[in-house]
Image (cartoon, rainbow, N blue to C red; front, side, top):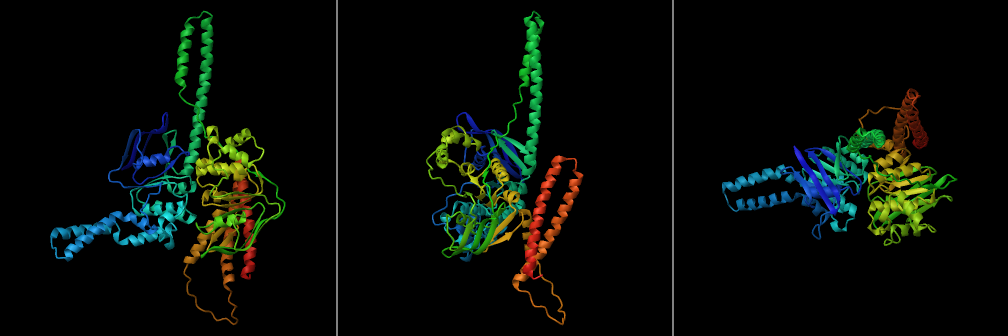
Length: 633
């Protein structure tokens, strides 16, 4: 059954430039579709057209009859005084109408009205109310609120007092509670932490309706979509798979088109040379060859049908790294911070050494950005001490970008940040970050969040640094910009500390995980994939019910281990299991390297994997030694 049918859709906001230019596609019931395209390609415009918020110039849009559609993009305006709980319960407006009519009929029957039609109507309404889950609304609200980290305290707050990210989360919860047939999600994970993102993924995978999602979160797209529609130059291109399939297939299609184009160009050059020779012979008196030359030139024109395939220009810029001589980059000692009655963390003692790449993760509101600001000296701890090494040169990309002169244009801001920089040099540097033409004369205040992040990075990358601190660096960036910053971070060989909910970014760069939860940081000296395995094992251990064992008489009762030793022994068991798995992986890599001895590229990849695995193993052995001491073994 067709859910959404779009034919020849055209939409423009300025004369001569169509954002959508003959867009045609079809989405069937139950599909999970990812809508991709660079920023400004018209994806959000298409969503607004589908919901009727925007009109279109040409074409047709058909939605399945009786299908209910919900969109998360802009946040609706609710009446003044509405709490978060009130907003969530607006999802049950249909049920509220049924409940009011049922109450009215119940009052009539209680007053003595014995009309059979009233009784039948009440029975039908009761069946419908139960079928729509009218008696389970409290359970549904609690389930959604818990999944999206909407606390009981937050549910009592005024909706207007929330931040933009919190409003998005609440509105997403309301949309899910509405039980729509078609979900349109525009960047749903932008303001969600890891816990809420993973919960949303599980919800969508179990959702029986149709899902169309705009997202730059590649991990999210890989887990939920089964088809990709790319909006390119106002038209649609189709890929039957998730994001990883799309990325590989897009490159394959580009190479195929390039080969076809080069083949045609070679044939055209050959024919042009022949036509030129025929014209020369005609000029020398061989009249018959003139007609053949004209015929050949017409054939050449008919062949000029394939335009040269193009790729988006890649931004090419790198962080300038300053040398670092020393061991300690940063030391935190007994750090504590509170805001009034809200206690963020206490007693945090950690150390960062040169060359480490640390991901600071945790739920929203746990204090990650606060800790980063204290490290940068923008905030002060209530207790404890923060010390950086004497040769440390830090650079910081905050989550919310501020400029000293928001009314100045990009060139002026670059020149103000870099003393002695000429206007032409500033423009050249901006061009490397995809700011070109008249864009460089825009006030920075009108830039999007992603553009402001790019501009701030442009200012940072010329500084000689050896300690890079990033707070949600991929927020608001499209996929091309995310890939660019990842390449820049890959090439950077200094120390890295970053806050992120982008699992793709964390998995690629983190060699150590700091998990901030319950007022403390737990240090995991491992990559993200291994961290996830450890967390899964910890959850499994919590759920295990210990079996009763018979007491055994012993001549000498061993002294019971204290709680710290017991915890260390549990961690020791996990660590030993991880060591065994890593050693098995290294043995498998050795076998693969022997098999790929003649394949240089494959062998190079395998060697890098083995080096990473060896680093993990070394870290695990160090952890094992420390845990052995703690466990008293």
